[in-house]
Image (cartoon, rainbow, N blue to C red; front, side, top):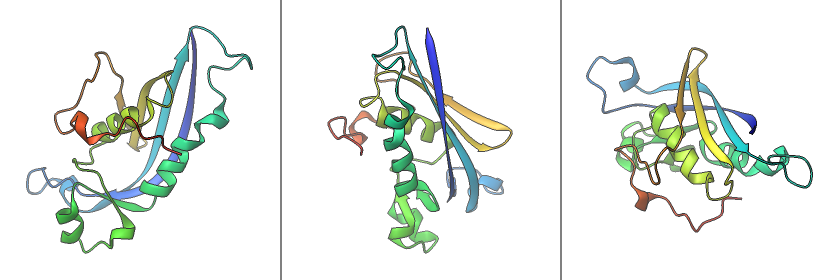
Length: 155
């Protein structure tokens, strides 16, 4: 089995409003995050790659265009609560925990990269959330299949 990984870096802010009062993650705060995608294959393509690293640019473009230096909001009400302009935020539709963000990225890019097996998401140098699918359409409770547009290609 061949396994490759690629890292992407971004900075973002968020607030986990579902946390109890006094929890440090409930207030607006920021992270310098690392996203690592893991792809595997039993064979190499005609260029001797699992996937050409250059072909993974759509993942970096999505992160740069949508999440980097943005406030990741559960919904418009949360964005408005912090007076964040729409162009400085990204509405997720779910709470922006590292676990949910890893799952979102997995399902966002799995249709484009069939070799994708895991997404790792680090908010701090000491913490990682890892999502890997072990059953078809395994969803975290906060995310529904209807949220994702599997027919859309991210460029």
